[in-house]
Image (cartoon, rainbow, N blue to C red; front, side, top):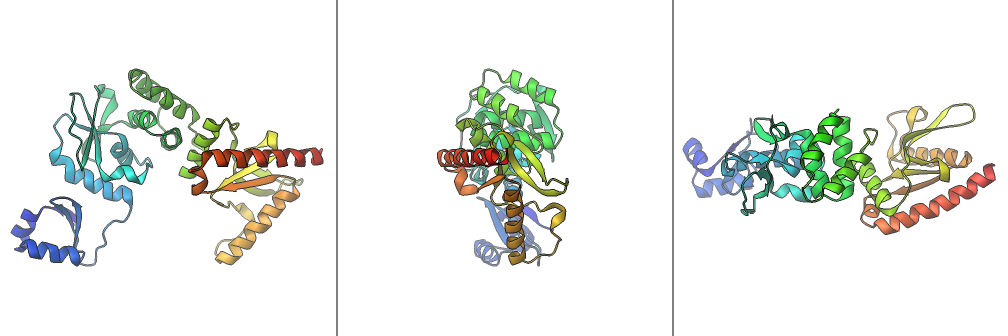
Length: 311
């Protein structure tokens, strides 16, 4: 079974010198985690490829560097709680401690804060910020769209709203607390993906009205035609992130990619027949928020013209 080891342990267990360690790395029996720490794989084992799984290994490998009063927090606590964060944040371990420190390094980022006892729990044997406090810290320090993703995820996990409100109050002097409050207010457990959560951040900052989430669209007989990510009833417009299609009962499983594409076209045609306008966007659009907002407003104008035709 895979486990973390140091070169000294390898030398002791396997009589490997530096050349042997390098050979095992080339052979992928050893996977570097951080300087001086490797994941030792058994024959036939594969190294984890998931960014969150790799970050958990980094947390474990960095534990010996952390002062006793350090609490795993921010992006690292997010990983422990199953909250998605930007992959770029996972190259270092994030922690919080009460005393002032400036010892950020290649493997560790330290923040200063006095955490209340209720803000600290144990997760996988590590002292970490609670789910509520982690949501607050991410909301404070990350852009609004990622703060919304954190709030969505925590709500899906059943976080107690009162505990988040209390954590927000305890952090009321911390930088970014207003953004954290806004992100929490916009959180919605119905959101089904990171892209949907980030999209709602774009909507809010651009002044786009809040949509209805996971709307079922039915025909005159009541048959479900589709379930869409976003619906703006007032603009007669439906929105979907990344072209994700939710076929519902109308499309059987086991379709080929070509069949799926054709089913998507038929599905969108049925929505147009009901005089809904459909707008789609993807990851690249989220990085161009002004252009995405303009795209949505143009869609709203078309949708309103369709509404006038319906009426």
